[in-house]
Length: 202
Ligand SMILES: Cc1cc2nc3c(=O)[nH]c(=O)nc-3n(C[C@H](O)[C@H](O)[C@H](O)COP(=O)(O)O)c2cc1C
Image (tube, rainbow, N blue to C red; front, side, top):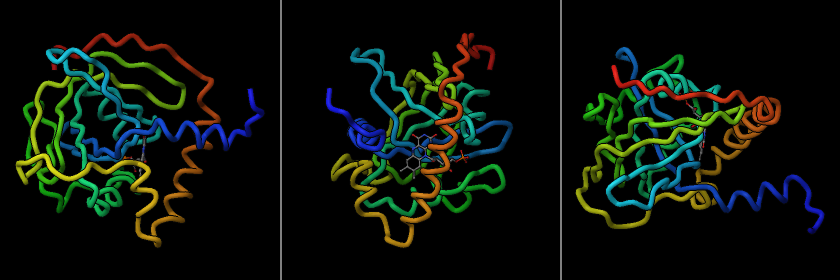
């Protein structure tokens, strides 16, 4: 095996990042949204549509999704840079990030963004603790197109976002990534297995 440095390994693993997606959630009237590039299809059965996503525990969305067992995952078009900046560069703990972003309540109660490529409303059916994050496994219970009502053009990929984000955002993006990496480095070995009992009563 070649003697790769940690950063070289990280760059290789970056090939496994997902498209850039927007996640929304709502608890007790408090709505929120964040950005992720760690989503994956988690079922090949067309009648059992399922996806997964890793969310760091320091994110406000983590707690809202963990406590409600519901979220909406939106694929984005490759021109939706501004939305990524609004949802992915600052936490919603102290501000309503969805104010001014057109959305409506979905069938599960979490917000569905009008402007996106497509959305998947999900109910959490299992979770996995990684120490620093939780991997949420979601059953897709409803799907829709964005407001354009057609699936054309490209979705935003992580590589496209990194290569084409406005230059003035880059230092902030890299600083946020370094902070998240420091958190993950400290917490990733402290895995506490979770038994997801489901939230059928909600
Ligand atoms: C391109 C991009 C990808 C991201 N991917 C993830 C991810 O996979 N998991 C995660 O927990 N945070 C990810 N983030 C960071 C969160 O979106 C960010 O911390 C956000 O401010 C969380 O908001 P909240 O605290 O309101 O939930 C990503 C951010 C960007 C810009």
